[in-house]
Image (tube, rainbow, N blue to C red; front, top):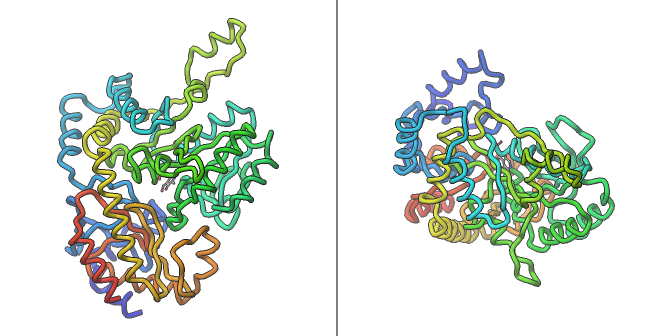
Length: 438
Ligand code: PLP
């Protein structure tokens, strides 16, 4: 109660803006995830890894736009690319441009399982398109997903059921990290399911890493059953130079994951609106308009599908995306940032030892949890987290967040942290010292 009162008193301008917003936006905002009780803080500006709110408080940004703000708020190379695109190219030419194939080349170079790629405007769209490719290619409609999985605003799976989705019937919801369970689901749904859609780490579900044995079991058994394996790397592709798939090695053969299709988004266009989906070239060829011609010549082939979207090749996203992958978030920057993230998480775990706080995650993306038992960090699924969450632990999480904000640390209310390029060890040290005092 005290922490909330102090928050209200020290953010009068945010409160006023929230009250105005309530008159036109239901709940006062347009992204449910950004609502915080009693009202969200309104930001005025960002620079590097700093944010300043409308009441003049400065924050170390430890969440970076839910992982999409990886390159920082004013990365000079990104700013330069935006300005030169505006000045020299212009916005949205309503025609094909060279830059979109350059961006596609960067993606195919970076993620070896992506032989062909197409762009869209969000991670949600990328998943919807990947699923439509899978349905077209297999002629089947069901999709195996996992409880705690988040694949976009209309593709979320909570407590074993599809929530917020347009069609309730097509989803088969399994348990994350349950190897035997998923083998059974796949064999039961042979001839019915078009795809398995899964995150390599459940991000919104609480940064729960996927077990290599689980993810490789999906790949092998889905492959045998003729079900397509779609890895949602919208959040996780920043965790390794070739995406998280390049880091998840088969426990026996030590080979990386190779999904049939991968979906991307968030940071890959340096902060511009983006989504992308790609994978095996035979699957993605459903978008090749020449397909229809082949089948008229008597060959057995897929019918072409249309994938149009006014902003799919918008000049800003294409040019900034290209710069992001080629020059800004290079393989070495990716390795270094994630190594720093691993050290940071280990330090946090050390501080948490013997308390009711724990941390889960991979590389530079993690989530702090408050649990009722003295917890482990090897949480396997969202149900395991929920079993140990009570009213008390929720209040503890809230108090932690209010204190973090007061000390100038910007993080997600649900405890998620995602490090931004340019963040330093001393800055993280300040946060670690705060956690220790807490
Ligand atoms: N997939 C995953 C794993 C995500 O974390 C998100 C967003 O948080 C999405 C898909 C949806 O992306 P977008 O918000 O760009 O629609």
